[in-house]
Every structure is written in C-alpha cells, then in structure tokens.
Length: 286
Image (cartoon, rainbow, N blue to C red; front, side, top):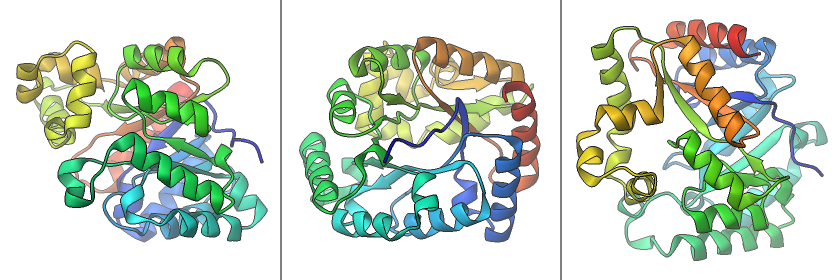
C-alpha cells in the first residue's frame, strides 16, 4: 500500500470526536463535500479512537481520516494492526494512524524513554503486519522527527510554528510526509482572541515535551509560564481567515506537505461557529 493522499489542507477537531455524535457525523459529511483532504481527531487518554475513526470513515466518501494522535500507552500494537487489517480495502486507503508517546505527567509510572517506547510500539505494529506507510508519528524533537522518517510515512507535529516545519523538513529530507497542526482563532477582538488561544494552550504549557520544543524555537521559560502574546501569536493564527491562510502558506513554503487546521472556539458554543469557520476557510484555501 502507499501513503494516503491527504491534500494540502485538512481539519483537526476535538469536537468531531468528543462532541455530539449526530452533529459530528453530519459535520464530517460537510467537510468531505467542502474538499478538505483529511480530518484529524485526537486519541486522548481513552482507547476508543479506532471505533470513532471507523464511524467517521462511514460518514465520509473521499477524505482521509487520521488520528492525531493514537496514544501508545492505551493500545496494544498487535490489536491496532489486526484492526487495520480487518478493514475493507476502501477504508484502509483512507486511513492514516498518527501515533504518539503522550507525556510523562499524564502517563505516570508506566512512562519510559519516548524514543525507546515508540520504537517498541512500531516493532509491534510491524510484527502484526501493519502497513507502515499508513502510520506517522507525533514528532517534536529532532530525534523523534528523524525516527518518523526512518520508520513511518512521516511526522505530524502539534503546536508548532513554520520555523519548526522548516527544521523538521531538513531532518526528514524529501519524500516524507510532514503534516503540522495549526491552531486558528478567528476573532477580531484581541482580548477575546487571547482568551480562546490561552484556553487551548495553557494545559500544554505545563508539559515538558512542548516546553522543550518551544525553548528550542527561542522562547524562554518565563514566556512559556505566562503564555506571552509572542508565544500565542507564534502558535496560533489569530484574527481572520486571511491570517489563517497566510499561516498555511508559511508552513507550505517551509516544507510541509499538508497543514491541518484546528479552529479554536468557545467549547460551549457547539458546532455552529465551527462549521461557519470551516466553510470560510474552505472558500479561502481550497
């Protein structure tokens, strides 16, 4: 098999996995019609992402369904490989498994060295007959990015900048998938926009993997602790659809193959504002 063709722009959405199921499936069908290349959903700390991805596959006809990410501590690689092999050929062709090692503070005592743990999981997938060109890694640091290119289709970095994209492409070289997530806050009021961006990042700012990556990009501990405006504007495209489009172009110019946009809205607002923004972004980008 070959790596799924995911186009240049996709959508990353927590709501499509954890929101109201009927509305999520209806929105998935619309995203497919709008022309997005891929739909990315989080794995989280539960083990239900594979079943949810199947439901999204059934709700769509064309676009790739991808995990961003499947947590290696919540799954056995042999089970994941068997699940993939049990899908129909049409479903397999539209599936991409982004896998990741998660974070020590979340996993607790089971946590072990990220590169070694990821390598063991990849060994298990290969032993189970998984099509490794349908796998990518949540890679931030240079060594994990390199591993993603050596053993999978490529890398799916989260909460990164175009500068990180350029560095990752240099490590990966040509021919390997690079599909960063990009947060988008479509809000003209600076105070409201900051509140939305802060809500989307403050949890991650306490996790070592992200902090270390941002420090490699030139941010100081104090900036990260405060979630400074400089950090927020580096991580999120804030303001307008045009700002989002400009950031997508910056990632593509830096070497990404695909950018998955996560639209940040008030979590209590439901699907209506998300779907409006997704339509506007599709008109600007697709």
